[in-house]
Length: 152
Image 1 (cartoon, rainbow, N blue to C red):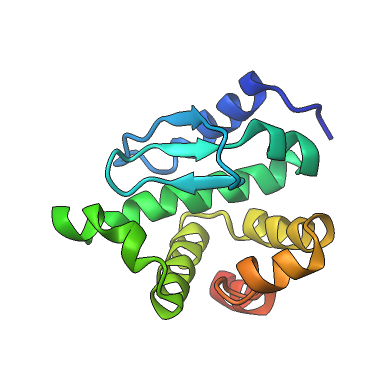
Image 2 (image 1 turned 120 degrees about the vertical axis):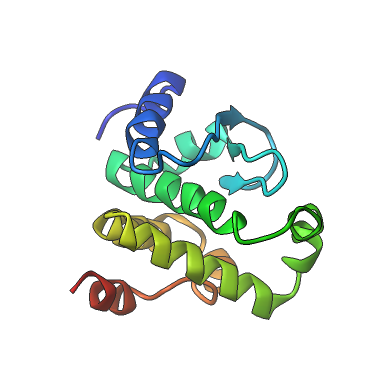
């Protein structure tokens, strides 16, 4: 496992982004409490370098996370301007959140990053505190068996 660096994550992002040629997102460092997120209005992907360092995700898992966030950008193309503008408010609805996270997972798999998404889920389960994983990750994303089914 390589040591984290801003250049390393940018390099991983640039490689993954080649699978999403229709997306013009940039990778931006931020200091919010989230690990990584995709902005529906300005189309940027934000990451928290402290959390990336803390959790020491493998490059494979980082590819899965970045592909997932780019998949959100692809999904946002289905929303009109006002839907994208108010997306963060709608995202508070748990059913809506589940729908958009699972859709991003499906797009991620369709773009060839299913194995990376599985790796991200496995590492997240091991590295995040159990309660955080059980409340903020597991209920909203595809399961490993669902990802495997989509890959077959």
